[in-house]
Image 1 (cartoon, rainbow, N blue to C red):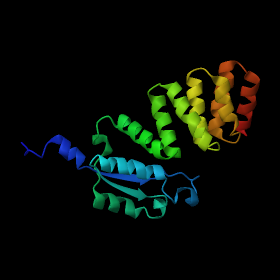
Image 2 (cartoon, rainbow, N blue to C red):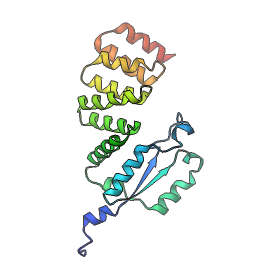
Image 3 (cartoon, one colour):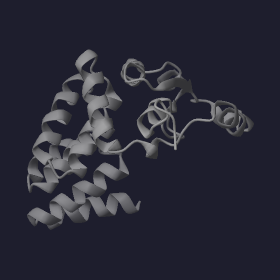
Image 4 (cartoon, rainbow, N blue to C red):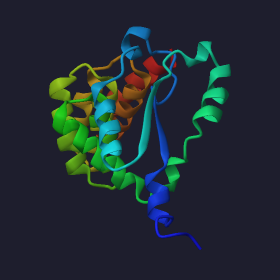
Length: 198
């Protein structure tokens, strides 16, 4: 039995959360792209702090050069598991939306678009990602995510417009092949497949 202040909610509120950027390590990332934290991440941190969480932001864009620091940092900081937060998809959706109300952050747009896809709310995903393309017209990730949402509602021509902007992207061209197959354009499907094989 706990005391009056020791219930489950206070324990959750005291949880320490580490926001680590970037979210994944990718060989294609350049130091100049990830050396500065996106402002949307600060908004997410601020929102969590507003709700009583102990939040710290770490920039690990070059952690592969200091792998020994990973274990040491996690041991010293002792963050709680994010899975302990109930309804984490809804929390993430709220955080991304809050971040976007302040600044058109690339990762917030992408994250919100993906969540809408997972919820099968493809029209909402399309709306979010279409807005994102106004700010990030050269983003392959946003274009592909938008194209996938179009594919899920059978708008293959619109999906192809997204994928064609990245003719040297294997992922974009793989999806483009699926679109051509769906609309019965076997000549273009075959042409892309040959190019992907070379």
